[in-house]
Image (tube, rainbow, N blue to C red; front, side):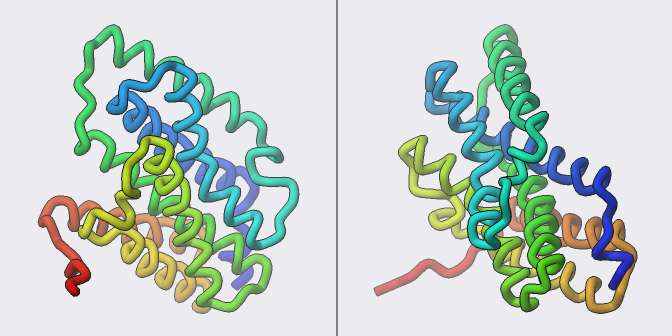
Length: 212
């Protein structure tokens, strides 16, 4: 267990950074699709990038929040937003729904791993750890879609989303119990979560809709 509990501060920061960038990009693309102004795009990017992690820290009673401990993440998302808006304008890039899906899938996997990891560090039960992974991975996208005046894709898109994070979270918990190396647990969780989401998009797998 000790191998997994200690990723090392550098690895953990890199994972948080990669997940934050991935979700920030999905927020920027969502704001661009809605033709928001510059402030709106930045706000949507921040909500997508930090919403899930903030809710996780609230539920786990962690203070200060992860983006307060690492204020460089705030500067990074702000810089990324400005650069992305300039690029989209100068290149006249047509933002499609498909362009948003791939950074979103990667961010889902990375945040699912960090959420489960943080809960296990605090000695939470396995199911709680898995749920924290789902919250971390899903909540930012929900906030992004709500602000963009859309039904959250995590609820309306019948292709598996939260289910992918649920499966990936159990992979992480299982490797934690087996005392696997931290990098292996991380890569397995990200690979399973993002891989399942990618397959769902590619093969158009659908969960059955509710019928009255």
